Length: 135
Ligand code: CDP
Ligand code: MG
Figure (cartoon, helix red, strand yellow):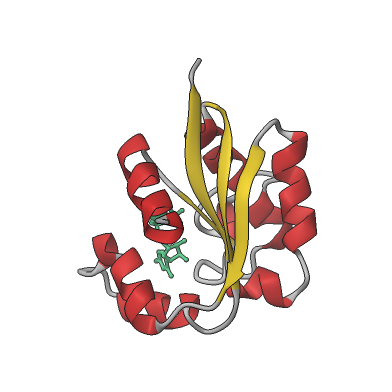
C-alpha cells in the first residue's frame, strides 16, 4: 500500500446536473481526500493538449469539444492506492458496462458523457496534476 495522488475531473454533463457534491461525497466516503479542487472552463486548445494521448482516436475531436463545452471541476485526490481506487469508484468507460454503484453507472449518460475522468497511471497522474495545478 502506498499513498498516491491522482487527478479527477467532473465533466460538463455532471457539473451541469448539479452532481459535484454527490460525486465528491463518494470520494470522501471511500477515503480519498480532496486536496485541492477548482471549477474552471477550459478552451478547446487546452482540452486538446490534455487529451493528447488520444489524438489518433476517431473520437478525439468530439472529446476535446465536449470537455471544453462547459465548466468542469478538477481535483487532486490523495489516499492509499488513489489511482486504482479512483478508477474503481469511477467504473468502466461505458456507463452501460460499469458495475453497480460506480460513479459512471450512477450518473453517466453515455460513453462520451460519462461524468468523470481519472488518471490511469502514476506517471499520467503526475503529468495531469501538473497540467491543472502548476503554480
Ligand atoms: O476515461 P477512461 O480512461 O475510462 O477512457 P479512455 O479510453 O481513456 O477514453 C477517454 C475518454 O474518451 C472517455 O472517458 C470517454 O469520454 C471518451 N471516449 C469516447 O467518447 N468514445 C470512445 N469510444 C471511447 C472513449
Ligand atoms: Mg483514460
